[in-house]
Image 1 (cartoon, rainbow, N blue to C red):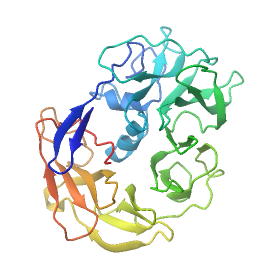
Image 2 (image 1 turned 30 degrees about the vertical axis):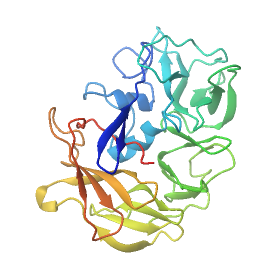
Image 3 (image 1 turned 90 degrees about the horizontal axis):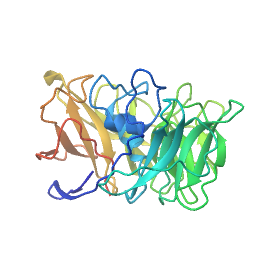
Length: 328
């Protein structure tokens, strides 16, 4: 993992997380498929497909960000037992030496997936199955008393978790982006109407029943992030990017064209800057976000206001596997 200087787009620092040998970082024949953003992060080829329905970069960026705490000091993992079936949620601290992670002392189930870190790094969250077969959201401290705390119902294992807030609470959905003030979030889940939701006081699995006060966003196929507490940046069906009002869902201002239709390319947004003035996109051939081995990636910094100049991000450290996770 690298930290970059956004003023000159060069690497500043590196951090390493050594993945335990028994962590589920790929799914393969003979084992139960594990839902975990770590599978997405470590996927190197189509031989190790993502367990999710969609593997677009817009989906991957928030999923993978949820693996880490706010300061990137811990990473959540799902440990797979030698039988290939039993799974436990745990976390590893920053460090470049691979270590064996003991099964958490508070682990009582056999099916824990979708591990994600709380922002403060003090607890790991996950979906799990009770002995009675009920699927729930749970958490446990990373140190000390590691007894499982039940956090509410889950919508199965098929959707990832994002943990936010003080005290932390989980949102089970895709494309989760929390507003700067923490009061609203963007998300997507099957059979759920709307794209922008009011934050709940407890953990929530986004379903048609649990979602409330949802705001549909007109002509929006993917939300990159929050421009402010009142506006979001959307990718439109035509491939342009458009600011939208987070209360009405109506477009604001002029659409921003990033990719040239004549070049047969598309642009996907990954992350928006903390001040809401710029966002990063990956421009690539349709349905080929990773390109061919050895391809040079096309990353661009795009202003959220139409008419301003885009900036190309070019560095030997970048590859087709690069995903930008946050912009502080």
